[in-house]
Length: 136
Image 1: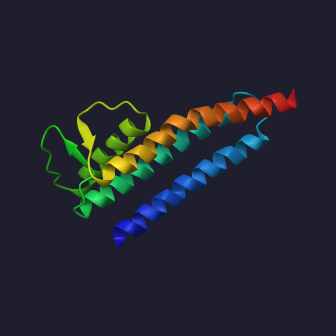
Image 2: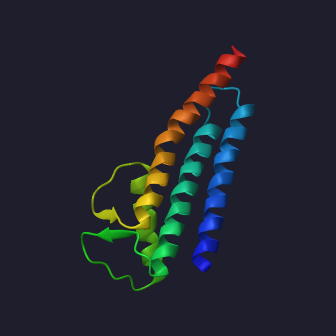
Image 3: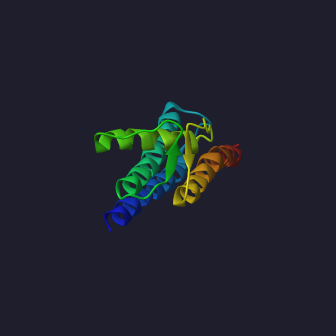
């Protein structure tokens, strides 16, 4: 039950962050600004940590979402959280080092996260470009 609550809250924060970045672009008058750059970095961080929390919550409930090439036994929950955020970042940016492999439900969560990571840059560029074209 706690996993569902944590996962739902994480997805809500991710959704609100995605919505906020696209709304803030409505008021942007430049193609690039420091504010836009920081907003995008913050958005990626929120998405990465949010999915990391989902992975860690599932693992701490005994649900395997990824396997490691090297056996790992965390002494504290924070170690699992750090490893889950790392896995999330590798998945979000579709790097896929291969040291952690998604399994079970983790495959489906990783697909959703990779889709967000893959489509977000294109959506942001299209949004900024269209906004710039309207102003020209």
